Length: 55
Image 1: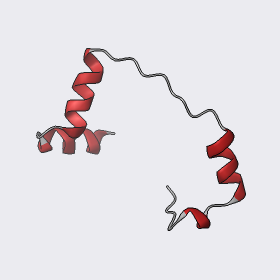
Image 2: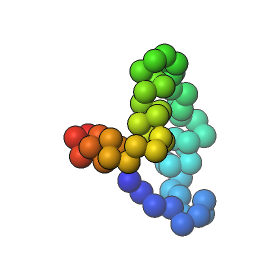
Image 3: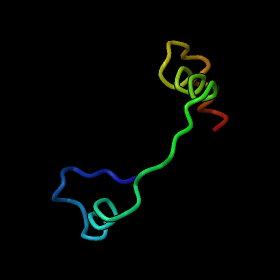
Image 4: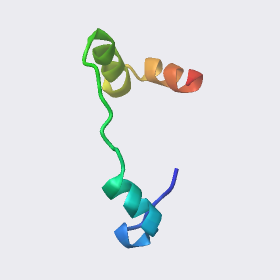
């Protein structure tokens, strides 16, 4: 994981990857998507903590 203070701190190779790379990832919207979205952004913090510890 890299931290960028601003756009000016990025290397040329990073810009090339962002602007010219394949950045679209197909997402299948199904029941599993809803469950995962709820786990990651829902109110059940204990379930999220357990998921983070396993992942």
